[in-house]
Length: 73
Image 1 (cartoon, one colour):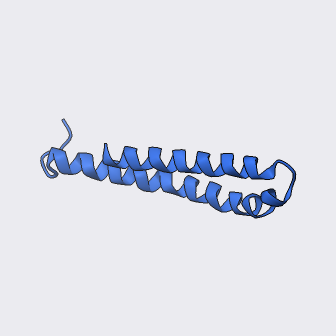
Image 2 (cartoon, helix red, strand yellow):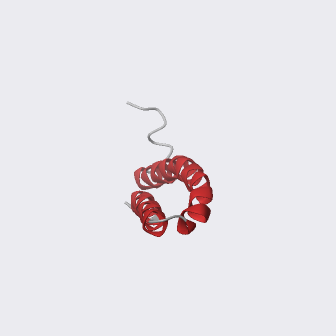
């Protein structure tokens, strides 16, 4: 048995675990978002670039929603 299990209530431990997981997952999402900025600035000026830029933004939205859902679950 974990000796620290009685120090932190179960609900609080679950909330803390979810918060730490979400915090760790925010860093890669932030890096991907920052790395996408140059492409999002240049792509609309290229042929068929607007559609590709839109797909990038939609994927970033999906990842952000997934991260937010994981933090709440």
